[in-house]
Image 1: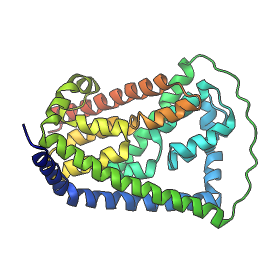
Image 2 (image 1 turned 90 degrees about the vertical axis):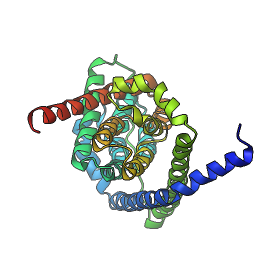
Image 3 (image 1 turned 60 degrees about the vertical axis):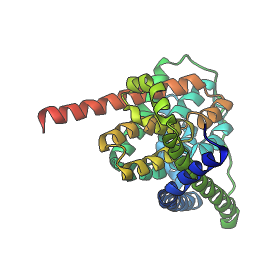
Image 4 (image 1 turned 30 degrees about the vertical axis):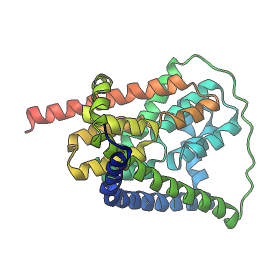
Length: 313
């Protein structure tokens, strides 16, 4: 039995070991986040985001949503779930419509930042954008065909007052600083946690416990920790830790691509799912729909690998 002093020493050793890699990863993720956030701020202030929303309106109607839901979708696509919900709650959507919108946004929110992080791990940025965008639309089309008719929306046209530059800049800057601070802390803590799990042999137990669920999803056993991180905290954090695994040579290129295919449309299944459920979304439909979608994507990519090895190698 180890003494508390020896235990703390081993934990401290884990923290020291991951510090250089975590520092490098956190800096890169924060830099990308800040750049993309600044671009989105300019789009909002200039009014271009509203123009893009108007262009997306017909797609909303195609999946059974009112055209006014376009702004909520575009906000989520370029920014995050919070901005989508802020726009969606003003529309008085039925649970059915909120669920469809939620699935689209959960598949393809924060696209620029999350694509950049996944690309850093070795996946194709173009493939990520296409797969995540089309997955959201296709799953929404399926839900529009299968979900029972919900209540009638009472859409009220919103009059938006033009804000001054400083009125928009101040809350944006504060939220960006808070987000970056949160990302730095979480990336470091996740890196330390992963090292601790390896140090004390907990990772082996975790891998054994998730062996069969991951096998159904078509994922390798050694992706268990990253799968948990992505599903609970989000894609950016999961991929950030994945990047460190890649640098260490722990995960192969194909394993990374398979996991990226899964978590691309099925991640942050705790906070984001609860947020949409709190405004009317049906949580189990949002979860199971994307799990099924991610299962199909992973096995399709495994088929690509098989065909490539069998006929083109």
